[in-house]
Amino acid sequence: MERILKNATLEPAPGFIYDVESINESLRPSTPMLPEPPVSPMIPPLRKNLEDQKRDKEFQISFNLPITEHLMQECTCEFVMPETKEIYVGKLQISEGYLTFESNEKKQCSLVLPLYTVQRVERLFSKTHAFALSIGNWHKMKLLFQINIPKTSIDKFCMVLRDNLKDQVHLMKSLKSFLSTCYSETLTDSKKEPKELSLGGLGLTFGFPGDAK
Image (cartoon, rainbow, N blue to C red; front, side, top):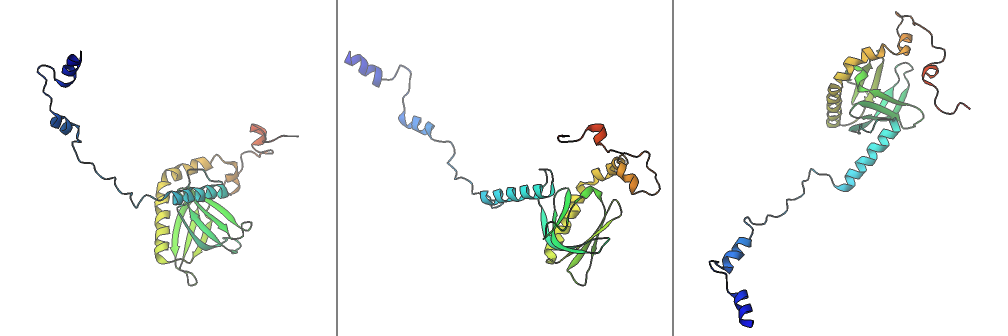
């Protein structure tokens, strides 16, 4: 019995070539192991990524913006009210589809301007500030922002604003037809008269939110 086991374990089968070196060679990888690629410096660290997400979330909540909006540029400026000429010091911010401003005293002044309502942008030179940005919207209202930041930052802010405005062109084309369906537009157009007066607003048609009691 021992002889049979010995022959079965040590002697190869007929016609079988047993080569330890060839087997070891076949088990070796065909290509040398490459070191892991270094982390790209363009990939932000996890901490910075989380901070950006938190900042975007606060930005969206503060101005009631959709979650698709992200804070792209911001700068400190003075906002001049078009009618009263009152000046508010605050922060001008821009996202993919909106331009926002909020004064340092939050209850004083806050605005949200959809970029698809912008019809004209002028970069003005000011004696008291680095430069001024004049923005005209659909209703011919001019908003003036006086900004004091380095020229490189100014150029970057204007470049982002220009690119984002181009991305909103398709919405600008449909703005006129949409506004024609809004009853409030008849109040700003002296050439047109309201077709009918609404005594209760849309609530009479679609219902009022909340508990009537």
